[in-house]
Image: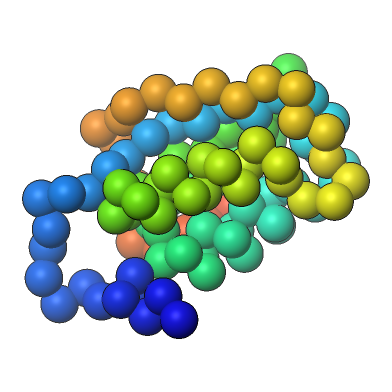
Length: 105
């Protein structure tokens, strides 16, 4: 189990935060709910939201290897999604605590 991912007893200087833009058939296929479930499972902080242009945007923050794992999962997405492009940008935004769905931007 990845129980260590939920250990918040000490802050780590090795936290990675990225903003991810996912394009393709990613709306109407439960992509956001799938993202919340997977990011929460990995113990990541951040958020996910639809964009008016049809893409999905997310912010992931946590241990670098877990953020990398989430990036790989996003390349596949849920069963009915078809990801055609995934862009990852280093980010300094505050991810907040926990992982949540945000309104469309």
